Image (tube, rainbow, N blue to C red; front, top):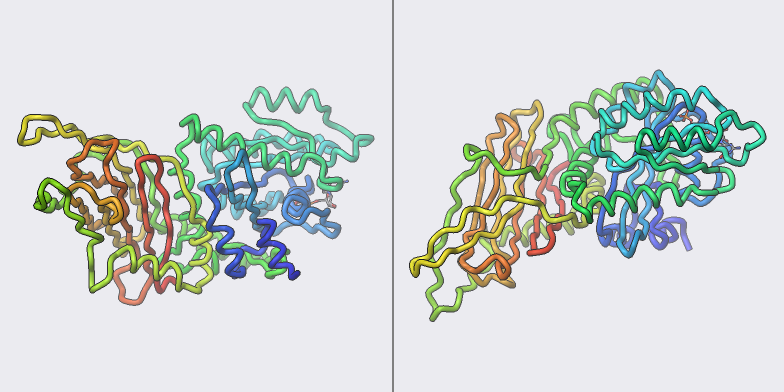
Length: 452
Ligand SMILES: Nc1nc2c(ncn2[C@@H]2O[C@H](COP(=O)(O)OP(=O)(O)OP(=O)(O)O)[C@@H](O)[C@H]2O)c(=O)[nH]1
């Protein structure tokens, strides 16, 4: 069995670029995608931990990381399939500005120190501050005291580290990348905590998910695909290719720009009234009280959904593949329901809340975006609703599209829609996100056209 086949089967992948289609399909099945960081001082064993987690073996010849390296693995946590997208950052001070630009959108982090080096332990506060400031104050962090196998040379006791963890609301484990002890447990514990937070509603998964996918992979129309130009490279065999410093520095600049300019979709609270655009309603059903099945809106002879799907399936670009593998689900967004409206018979018609979306175009003014949301064909039982929202994107924009369905919220038909964002130049960058919302969950597929 080839290495790629093995990776696909196990869900492990350090080579996240250009994997086989079986692997792509495997990754598509993931319910969640979490961006993870591995941070900490140089020489603490971050790369070895990542390698142990991905490859299940100790990395013998570990050199200093230059910039960042990347690995991914699909794991099963509490019956859910989670794709962990892990960014191993350089611990050396001179790469701090490079690595900081990768923090954004991270849902979890392994904060690593070396139990045989007090210096690395003393630096933890700085790393922690960076993570909470640059990634998110809600980032789930597990403190890992690595090199547990070198207990005889220990400079940091288990007790003081666990006290530090407690004081700073961190989980804590001592690990050994050499023996593999607690390595898997560290990553899984972090993922499990994130999932628990999502389940309990304390973490906006939608926001995390989309921000992770888009900030990591969506292409900046000006700079090109982040995954190809600005991301860390890999040699396709598992080991990321180490990069020359000037190259990494140049990428930081591009990456920063790309992250700023990439369209970011964030579900937020209620949209300000000024940001809402009126939705277009279709006439009520005509056929003997039964709703008319209007089917998906058609454009140029093909439904938007079909068009997005075909782009989704046919793309062969690498950044596209990244987007696809990000496909998964996230928790329902808590959009505000519109106030009920009165029906002709005097009864009140409740409106089902829909996700609200926020687009932040960063510095790029050439971006455009439009969102279409409508009931899904299969269960199109109410009035058809369609919201098409061209977005000038002069400023970060928040808007919502509301169902015009006349059926009660519990029976409201699921909706689907697509978001198109890109540059106006013909043939230039364009990305479609296919959104599907059911009454219980929202899922997203991403696709892109001409993006590379
Ligand atoms: N004994 C022992 N050595 C380890 C362990 N983990 C890493 N090392 C060694 O520690 C050294 C540094 O490991 P790396 O993984 O490169 O450290 P890093 O944190 O990624 O370093 P930077 O990339 O510079 O940030 C290497 O010589 C590893 O062999 C461990 O668990 N036990």
